Amino acid sequence: MAAVMFHCGEPRAAYELTVGGLATYDALPAQTAFDQYGQNPMVPMLCTQAIALWLLGYPDQARRRSQAAVQLATDQIAPFGIVVARGFFMMMQQCVRAGMVEHGWAEHTILLASEYGSHVWEGIGQILWGWTLVEHGQREVGWAQLHQGESRLRIGEGETFQSYVLWLLADAYGRSQQVVTALITVSDALTLVEKSGERFWEAELYRLRGELTLAVAREEKSQKANLTSSP
Image (cartoon, helix red, strand yellow):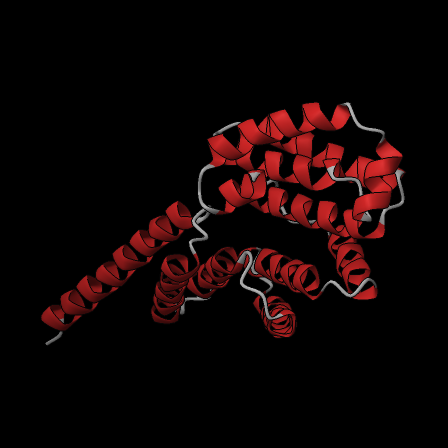
C-alpha cells in the first residue's frame, strides 16, 4: 500500500504507511520474512519512505533512510534487495542534487542489476548516470548512457518510474539546448501520467515544462529583437 500511494503521488500517506509497516515488521522474525519474500521487506519499505520524505521536504532524513536501506541489504547479502536499495540511493542523490553520482557507485549498481537480470534497475541506473554526465557537461558520453538505458528499459517492458525517466531525458535535452525535443518529451511524460496514474514526479514535470516554455519565449523574443535591429 505504501508503494501504491507513493506512485499515486500521495507521499504523506505513503510515509505514514511505511511507519506502520516498519513497526509491524519489527514484530516478525527476520529470517521468516526473508524466506517468504526472497528479500528483506524492510529494504523496499525504507526506500519508499526515503523518497516520500524527500517529496515532503525532509532531505536529510530521506538520505539517512536511503543509506539505511543500502546497509541493511548489504549486511544480509540479499542480491535483489541490494540492487533495489542502490538504485533508490542513486535516485536520492539526483533528488538532493548532492553533486555528481559517483562513477564507481553507478557502475557497480548497473553491473549488479545486469547480473541479477533486473532490466528496469539496469536501465534506470544507466539513465541516472547519463543524466549526471550531461548535467556536468560531458554530453557525448552522457547521451550514450542515456540511450543505452532507454534500450534496456524497453526490454523490461514495464511502466514503473517511466514518468520520472522521461523527466530525466527531458531535462537532459534541455541542458543540451534541444528545448523543443525536451518539451515534446515532457508532454509524453504528462500523457503517461494520465494513462498510468503514476504521479509522484508530476509536479517536477510541470515545473520543467514551465522552465522550458519560458526558455522558448526568451529565445523567440531575442530573435525578434535581432531582426528588428538588423539594417
